[in-house]
Image 1 (spheres, rainbow, N blue to C red):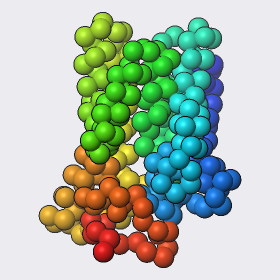
Image 2: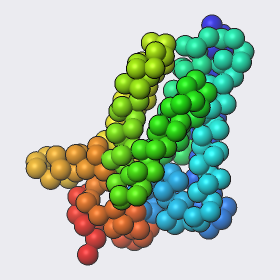
Image 3: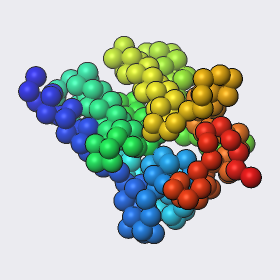
Length: 230
């Protein structure tokens, strides 16, 4: 039990390493939390730092979740411990202790867990992301891929622990989208409901993806949630 607790704690700390934030600091000297959506993710790197750097950041984000999951299996701690480590790393990525719990979306984290316990889940999710990219609805298609992952796992006869872990990852994804790094919501009413729906389905507060992702630093120009840039 002590080994499992140590692995899970290590997984959270490793998952918390903010690779996108570090890329912004090292390559452009900017704080990604102040740009675009404010999410510390590969999307922020793509729009505000360097497009080639997205590949490196994405691979590192996958690796930092894959590693503790794989170690749980490699050390013989059992599938449940390995999945707990993967979930802890995903939570660390989404709510990193090093950035006051202001993190990323967690899509790469799910890829990392799947790569360790069910490699076919990796191309499944990538296919949804690629299709979303082609039609300009990456967030919506990514959510669809994550939501259908438990069905794929059940259909292919994977252990219940893996299926339930995929359900937990869907729940974490939804929670992160709605929480949106504690971004303020409009007052209670129809606009708040619209913003929450956009956050859930589109992972943003406004309808235009470019207007949302290309926003200048938040301390100089930050429209209220739900309002489009002029």
